[in-house]
Each structure stands twice: as structure tokens, then as C-alpha cells.
Length: 310
Length: 250
Image (cartoon, rainbow over the protein chains, first blue to last red):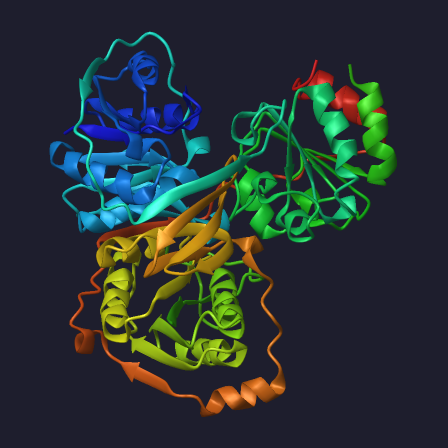
């Protein structure tokens, strides 16, 4: 019984999400292997081999893996699948794109977004925007799983010494190609790994006003997030979105500003350790889950908070 | 080019679902049902492509109970040309649904299939990718922009770090993200027109597909509730609490 994790990486760096998937895989009880697929990824494979508790790193190094196209990666996963009882990836846009395709090619179900491992065939996953937790059992010969990163601690990125073994690259037919990307450049921490998040909702009024949150975030070394309403209104790009259909986060401190607290938003942040809500509407549902609620005009409270910190 | 748009009838996004006391699932009796919001975006995108001259016919399909006919009528009112319901009262899971959709795709031969990226009931985010695999078509998931250029679709995708643009050869699968479009309001004349459009009902047996679930739900529970904390009166009090009580800031 061996598990294989598809490593998520970008710009030559391992993404932290992989480390959470490692912890989930270790709960299955068997050895854990990693698959690094990319182009010119020898150094990356070396750092993957240092992750604590990994037995083997399999490396597919070829030009077709320079960008994570689902067609190529799924074909590669399927070719390696006979060696494994479990195949996992983080439930990020990367894992969500690639893994269901591999599952269907293997004629097995996928268990999406697990938050707990009950046994090697039984897992807990949120449904209905996290308003219910389902315990599901798979009867498939290979369990294909995406891991909700907030459900598992990150494994240690140092201390391991896994064997590195090449994996043969495949030609998946070339029906898709990478054209370009436009990655959000920010000096602030990433939303999914930030210790503190400052998030804005419809109450921010416009995109310009997000500068107030950015100033606060910079004081706290925090990431900036947003509710779906703020994204919908065009205030900020979609990659800011926290919620059922955006990112799921669980920072030490989540400061919700001008966010009413729709079910869809709570689904993405309610596991945060401490939640602060600032909203002028005392009836806003966000106050029902906030540890500290401040009923105030955000345009006064946020600058005041920024000035009184640090 | 024909576009196939699979849609799902789900508990309305405004409903706060309740877990059944016997732990077998969530209460769906007497609960408002609607078209999955991402599927509405898929129908809208198909209609826009047709209006722009990139598509000639839109076929909406669903797999579910008799009542899913109402959801298909909504798709027809938005602008789909005809509809097919694969009628079943059994539990459906993404792999089975993808297999049924493959059969329909093989029969209808569309150039493009647009699906919602995820259904807001089981939150699986799988069906489009699985269908692409079964048809051996390329996929462009989480789309925020779709352009048809010759024999390709150029799709901008919402990814965790920003945006990615890929080109996929047609026929292809596209799954929709939130910002792809804003679905139009359905007007009364269009609702009346939709009633006259063809809605075909078939059974899973007619398609020769096995919809048997692969995952068995052992139990469904409510998550641990978060308790409301304290109201603070001022920014000063908030800062003091965060420093001295919660100890999350220095």
C-alpha cells in the first residue's frame, strides 16, 4: 500500500500545499512517494526529496511538463498508477484541474477536498459549502484524493532523504497548449499560507478603497483577501476570493472588513483561529462567528486600527 | 458548431441546509431548488457564443429526477434550443454522470461542451474534467474568458496565483468560473417560448450506462459550531484584546 502525491510547484519552487498533502498521505499508514513533473526540475526534485517522511521521488522531466496541462499530467499519473493504492494532490486549482481527469481515465471515483482520514478507504469531506461533513467510503481499487490544505498540518520540508528515480515522459497528443499567464505579483504573503489575512467585502464600496486594507495588511505582514461579493463587484481580482468557490483559508487571525458573512464566504474562512469582524451593520451574520466584533464605520475604524498597530 | 451544456438541479444557494437528524444526508424535502449557479453561467456563455455567431445550436442536458425538467426549462428560457433529461431518482456521482454525458456527446457530436466548474451541493468539482478524460478531449477548467479562434478555443483560466491562458483544440470541454459572465434575467416572453421547445426524456438504461455510485456515504454530520465572541466598543479595545487575550499580534 503506497501513496503517490502529485507535487505542485511554480517558478522552480515547491508550493506549500504539497506539504499538507504529505501529512494527509502519511495518515494512510504506508510509504509515500512524490511525483515531480516539470521541465528542468532537477533542483526541485532535490528539495522534494528533503521533505520529511518521503520514501521516493519520481521525476518526469520533459518540455511538455513546463506548464501544468491536465492532459499531459493526467496521462503521466495514469501510467504510474499501477504501483499505487492512493493518488493524492492538494485541492488547489492545480489538483482540482488534473486529478479528476486521471481518476476518470482509471475508471475510479475521486474523493474531493478531504479534511480527515478515517481509514485507508474512508475519508471526511465537507459538502454544501461546509455546512455538512460527509464520511465517505471508497470501494475503488485506487483511491484518488484531493486534500483540503487547511485540514492537515504542513509536513516538515527538511530532514528527509528520499531516493530520486526518473519517470518516463509521455506524449499525450498535444491537444492543449499554454499561451500565457498573468500572475498576481505581490510582496505580501500568499493567502493560503498567510498567518494573518485582512479581507474586504461589498462594504468596501470600490477597488480603490482596498488600499485601506493593504495598508493594514502591510502593518501586520498579512495577505489581502475578499468576499465573492467584492470580486463580483469588480473591486479585486478573483484570486483574492475566499469562500466556497474560491480559496479556503485558516490563518491565525482573519480580519473581515465590510463583509456581511454569507454562507459561501464563511465556508472559506470559518476554521480561522481568531476572527475579527468590522462592519457598520450590527445585524450582519459575520458577527455570529466572530471572536471580536466591532460595529463601526470601516472607513474610520480601519485607518485607526492601522495607526494603532506597531 | 453545436454546444452541449450539462446542468444540475441543486438546493438554492440562499438556502441554509440542515443535516438530517438520522445522519443520512441533508434535508432536501420542501427546500427551494434552482439551477446550479455555475451551470447558469455555462448556459449564458453558450447563448452568447451563439449570439456572436460562433455556435449554431445549444442543447441543455441534465441527469436527475423528473423535477429537473423545470431546471432545463430555465436553460431553454435563457436561450438553449432544446433539452434532454436523463431521468433517474438514484443518487448520482460525478463519474457516473460523466459516463452518461459521454454517451450523449457521442450521439449529439457537439464542438464544445460547457459545464459549471462545481455543483454547490456536493462541491466535487470533477464532472467536466472526467468527461474530458472519457471523450479524450482537451479541457479548459475555471474559465473567465472564452474565445473561439478557428479550430481552437482560447481560454483564460482562474488559477490560484492569477490567470492562465491556454488554447485547446476543438472539440473541447470548458468549465466556468464566476467571472466568465453575468447570466441574464429570464423574461416572461422567453419563459413562454421555452415551454414550446423540445424536451426529450431518456433513461440511463437507454444510454447503456451504469450510474452506480462508487462512494458510499457512511454518515453526514454537522460541523462543529463556532460560537459568537464578544463585541468590542472601540479600536483601542480591539487592539488590546488581540494583543493580550488572543495573543495573535505583538
